[in-house]
Length: 181
Image (cartoon, rainbow, N blue to C red; front, side, top):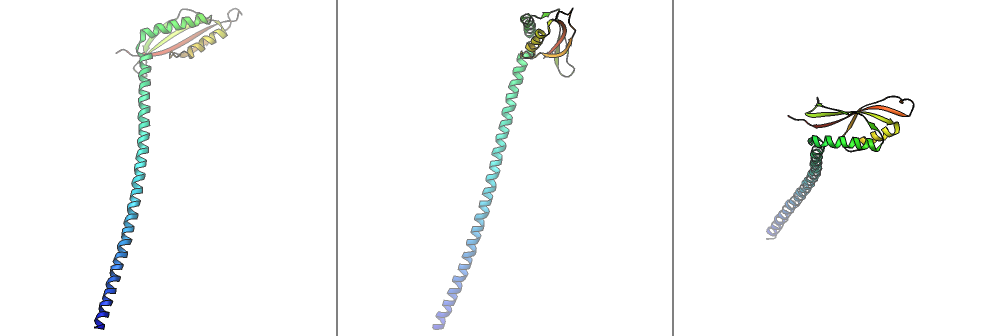
């Protein structure tokens, strides 16, 4: 009987050791699974953060594109479409600024042609000017800062007329309009 009890005790101890071993292996495997899960979770979190960052950049790009589109439409409506009204405004502006700067504006010649680079019409004004150099320079500054989308394409200056401090200048201005089909 003692032998039977000791055999049972040994078997019980062996079973307890086996169960403890399995339990330790299971605990270690569970810890490994948790570490893998935590690593995958960290990886997924980084992916989500990257996607959020890219989404923010995309939103900025889309917003910038929309802003540019609005500006282009505003530019088109303000400068390219209303040709007749704008030509009148340009002529009035040039006459008013020349008068204010005491610059004599001779016979202005206008011509229009198709632009070779785009579907826009090129509008050119040739302005023969006479006046003191500083007054003409101020007149040109008025044109450059006017916001009327006038481009100075050519400027030629002649010497004083009879030594009176008066100069003659040929000024070419250009602007664009939406072409007519």
